[in-house]
Every structure is written in C-alpha cells, then in structure tokens.
Length: 461
Image (cartoon, rainbow, N blue to C red; front, side, top):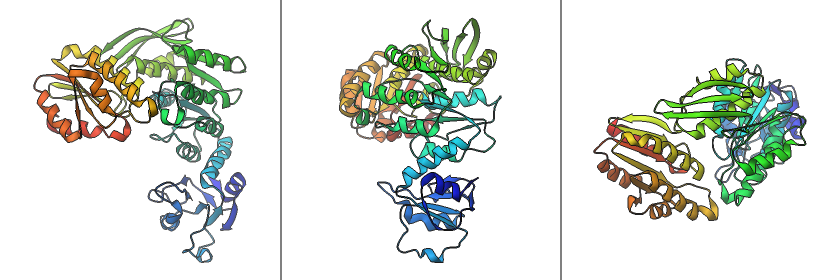
C-alpha cells in the first residue's frame, strides 16, 4: 500500500484534506471502475475532465484524489476527514512521478519491451516463459503509454518478482520518459519499422525514439536487440560499447546470440531449432509466421537474461498460447480465416502476406480484407500503395475499406475493390466464398475490422 505521505513526497503536492497516514490499495484514473480504497487521479483530456468525476470516485469507495484544482461546486469542507485530497500543478506529470517513486520501492525485476511490431506478443511470451519460475505481473492489455505504464507499476501486487511492461510511443520523447519511470533491469527492443510517422516523421525518427529505451535504461540493465535489422544492430552495438551489463542479440542470422534455424511452417504453427551458444533444441511454436519466431527469440533472450536455463526456455516456448487476433486461425465451414485485426502497419501487413503465401495452396482462392493503416503521416499514400502491390502478389482478391485504403486498392489493380462501408464489403465478400477459401482480415485498431470477423463467424461458423 502507498500512503498519502508518500504521494505528497513523490509528487510535491499539497494536502488539502485528510491526513498523511491514509493508505491507498491502488491507483486509478477511471471513476467507473475504481475499487474501494484506491486513489483517484483526475486527468484532463481532450474529451473529458476527470475533476468532474471526483465525487463519483468517492461514492465507489475511493479514499483519496489527486487533483489540479478543486471543483467550485463541491464544498471541500464538507468532505470526510478520512478522504485525502492532494493538489498538484499537473496530474499527468504527478502520476508519472508517483510511478517512478513507487518503481524504486518494488522488489521486483522489471522487463520493458518496445518495438514497432510484436511488442504485445513479446510481452505475453516473456510473461509466459517466466510464470512457472517467478511470481509475474504484466501490464494489462495495451496499457503502454504515459498513463497505462504508471498505472501498471502502481498497481503491481506486492509479491511480484518480475514485472513485464510494454512501452509504446507516437511522438518524440515518450520512450525516454517511460524508460525513466520503469527503470528496467532488462530492456527489449523487438523491431523498428515505419509506424506512427505522423508524430515521429520518418524511419530515422522511429529508430531514434525506440533506441531511447537503451539510452535511458540503467547502466546495469541487460539490453536485447534485433540482429537481423542491420541499421538497428549497428546503432544498438554502439550503445552497448558503453554498457557494463550483458547485451544480447536475437534473430535468424548466424551472428545472433539467440537464434532460430530450420524453420518449418504448417497450420499447427511454426517449428524451428532454438540455438544459444553451443546448445540446440527443437521448438514448436503454436503461432504462424517468421515474425512470431523473432518475437519468441526476443522473449527467449529476456528469459535467459533473468536466469532461466536453455532447456526451460525451449520447453516454455512450445507451451505459449495462441494470441487473440494476431493471425489467429478460425475455421469457417470450408474456409480458413486469418484474424489479424489486433492492429496494422506496413511491416505487420507484410508478415501476414508471408504467412498467407505459405497456406493458400490448400484453397481454391485467397482473399485479403484490409482496412486503413493509421498514423503513417505524409507517407501514408505511398505506404498503402506499396502494401497494395504486395497483397496483389499473394492474394487472388483484395477487398479494401477506409479512406486511406483507397490507394491500396488502386495499387493492387484489377484484383482489388474498394468499398465505402464494411456492410458493402461483407455483401460482396459473401459472394466470393462459394469454394473453400483462405481469408485474411487486417486493419488498424481504429478500423474495428473485428466486426467483419464477427459477421463472417455468424454467417459461416
């Protein structure tokens, strides 16, 4: 439990009500889901102001609130003295500072994972590998920004031995700040590809932002980086030269510290041989695709850095579970659906194409159903066109929906159709599914392409 005194000390806040000894069982910024005994952080956003919901939080059992101002329509002198009110200049910054303070109180090791693609998958794999050997906590869902990461740290169970955090960014400086807060013992960079270009500009901007994980990590942190991306490898190695701790690379290339070879793909997953130093072991990963193998290697490197044996890692990789909406296979009568609706950027779309190319021979037709790839900035049209050309090389039909996906459909040529709505697309798609087909559904989170998956399951499941 964190006390009011600790909150005041960590944030530099002023106590307006309550007393320094009042403890909090957790921290929340959502008055709808706050639990009794927690501290409510009133955050002002573009569409809401958390200060409007302070009393709602108290009615649900909150024992305190972190605020920038006190609402004029609430008489603070009528509040119970057992409720702590702490005033700070900026509640977002105070939340970050409080998490950075609490991180230092944790007895747990921290693993921080970032990357353009695969960070959520790698986070889940690391937690899966470590769970039989440690008491593990992980950031829930996509709690990976400057609100989610601090909340993950502040709500870490006290018995936790390893905390696995996912760090995300869409503008310069976020990874640096998140790394300062998380202070990781193991820092994992999964990949660097064009993504979030609206805020980061270009590939160099993305690379610089991601490498901040290594530059801001403590000097004794283990760094894990991708060997197969030459530019990333070279820049990571430059940073590693000034480190006192272990640096581990992973990849398919022979120079990688943690490597996979002899890859074989099937509907059951991906088989390969895991290589570390002079050891080899067979692994059957219940996930489809080379990109998942790279994620598994990153997770393996992190687990080795935390002391797991080679045998424990190899055995654990074969036991990871399939991940929801990441090239998840679903049988729809005679058809096979690849549900890849978790998110999309050019690199993950290319990975989906590679998987589909290995599976499509068993079907009369391969169909790609794709939506916009968001946050690509000025390069969006060009990157969508490039994606359209790649899709046309693999699929017999390409059905696209979304404003930005129009460029994708145009580049895919005669194989493609662009639709104004998902309803129109679904109607046309059903007309194509007369013979056994392989269907990929993919798009950015904002496109909610899982709605198409649900409609197909209702019609054919």
